[in-house]
Length: 382
Image 1: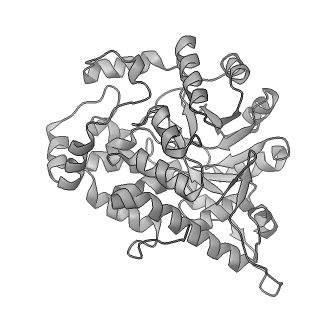
Image 2: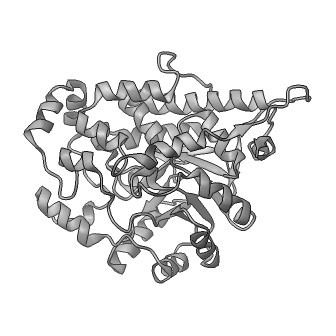
Image 3: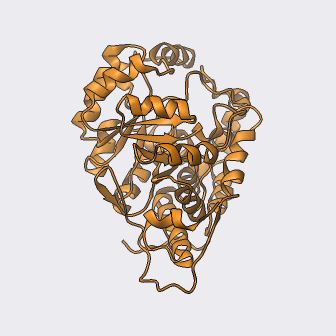
């Protein structure tokens, strides 16, 4: 696929600024914000950008390739689309737009349990290549049924989430009525009226729903009942007792997302999982925690030969991908960056964002004299 992007928006920051003008304030703040005072949200990117890389200008260079192998699959770039909840709230039909873009560009797309597209639809759009992220259900029956659906949809990788033992404390969402239970205020309605394109698209595609969870939800829930249903349905804290049955049941690759300590990494390896995504949920769960790059460097150095170590949270550009890869990540994921793209440019946003990131990363690799993505670690200035 030829790499093309809209030159009016040559950075993720440009897409973020455009998105802010296109969607209601409550939707933008849900996408853009972290938890508490947003300390870790900003630390994620700022500390990642302290990583410096060394170029080799006088060495012979045959060219650079973004192609990256992961779990026996060759992808066209070392980054994928991270799971994001309530995507259709931020831009109508956005999970479908992003799944199609991921398929066309041959990069992974991870579907969240609590987004607005079903497992089956994600599989249909990606010809069985979409990954699935599982929020752990409180009931074994529900857990098993969702996992069986993911298997039937031929998802190659199941991602289980460990960093949501409680819902994050997010002041903006509380003020905007997007906490659980959610509520729609007069202020939110006025914001919607001020964004006619967003409102029209929402009317076109319908009110966003938790499509994967629809078969298990009682019909006609009001917002308060929805909050109660979510609280009763999911039990966020993972432990060995919860992970082992999933490992026994799931025959594909099993990855855990949210690992941020050596202790947790050792537990994951002991339990026989295939991969770790070092993550702090984009700074949306623990404001007093470390930036993601700090534990990534340690975990990759100690355990990178025993398990696939990947990273998300704080990555906003091609140079950021390069910094994470040089620090030991075998692969990277981004959530907000792609949602900014879709919220800014609608149907064109997915392809634009992937193409932009590929172009940026290709330029970094050529500058460094880095032929393969596995060579990034040779360019790290320690």
